Length: 286
Image (cartoon, rainbow, N blue to C red; front, top):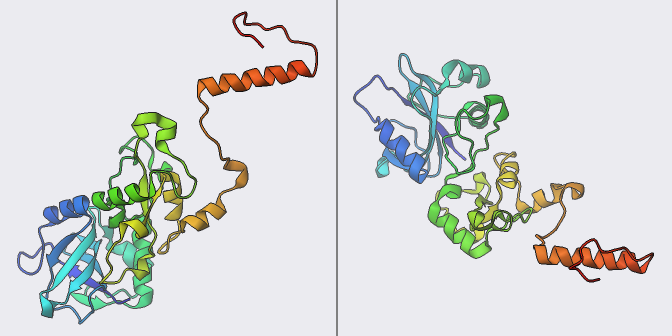
């Protein structure tokens, strides 16, 4: 797939610069923001990756990613789907160290396959997560060394797609079958993450999400493990094969009445195989 690098100079008031804060809010809330982009870019087809770099005097480095919607000749729309907060860009020095020969100072340039893959690796290693999720730890509650972040895509945070997927599949993990409601009662009713099973390289410009077939429910643990492999995450079937049998036991929650019946049955069996045990509970007959 074609990928380009597009420069954005925060020191210039003219040009194609977008409203940074507004776009960042839209990416956070909806997963993407559509912006206009300049006519100086090389001819690239819709669906091409766009890596955004800051080229100012004091701010220089990688700060975002997007996808070509329409070329400049057809209106020039770019969907920004990843955008770091101002001041948290990946520094220029890191890029030069990890991506030798990167045409950083060009206004726009088509990237080689090697450069594009190296940029993805740099982003995965250095970029902080911009996603918020109910199971994420609150900032400051854990040391940085204790956190391991996994990149998800915008479909996994789409509220309506999430709802449709859970309504169709149910709220048990497709990998380990964990169900929050069975463990936590009403607090966990309907609570589960969803995982997008279509590999990233297969998401073409004309891709349309089907929440019933493209999304599956996954608990936080299995979801994190799925995204340990990039750009093609592990499938539910692959993860099921990886789970160690000794650490994964199928079971069910036993209510107090059933547990008491099981204890009574065990006591009767012991009594029939030896001396009758005196019942410590005078109200219980055996």
